Image (cartoon, rainbow, N blue to C red):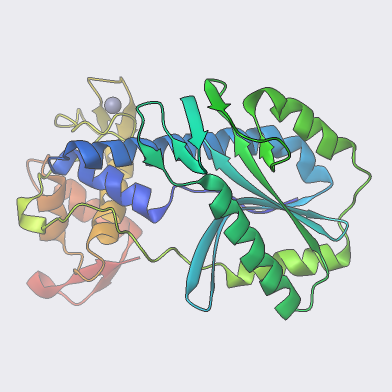
Length: 302
Ligand SMILES: [Zn+2]
């Protein structure tokens, strides 16, 4: 059973929204790539675990907060009074561990993901006890990318390497477990505690007036040329999208980046930047949103 699916995080959506509109320095570019890659890795893991959904309750991408500790869990599976957590890393290339420090292929120190797994495990166990659940917590660090290799790591750690992944899933699948009422109760309880992540420490600074205006293709994040009749056609990746869909997407992007700004016809027209007149914008807003007020001071919300 799947009771919470995965979506791109708000931070990733904001980065995607900013990318074509702002000059990203190398660090910002790398951070977006890292986030995209992480998300793709998590999607790949979801696909692998699909067969397990018959006998386990899955919650994907849950963020919890306890005593000011915010932590995010890529995936959880609950069955027969056991809760598995999965931290999924899409690392690629040769990593080395020296004196408990992890080094990436270009010799940069990366955060030790085992510490993250241990912290999550401890916080989650504490939470379960506080809420009166007796489930045991078993945490796994999953490396999903077949091009990943880790040198000099002691054995016996809760790590699943790419070459072991299919057997690991198979092993979980042959365990004689089932979803109990207590498992369902725990899953619902965790779902109700889920919060939207609140820290976007790595977002570049941005200001409405200096951002480039336009509608970017969702496939390659390059700006569209003006539409042909009622469709946009991306010249770089050949993606096609209706003008209505594209305007709605841009509207959501605007609201995500500027949550306190009012959504007006003029503002959205300016933000989209690709239409000759306001007809399409007006039509999409009136067809999909509620209008507040009349004339120049009117604004829209969904
Ligand atoms: Zn494209």
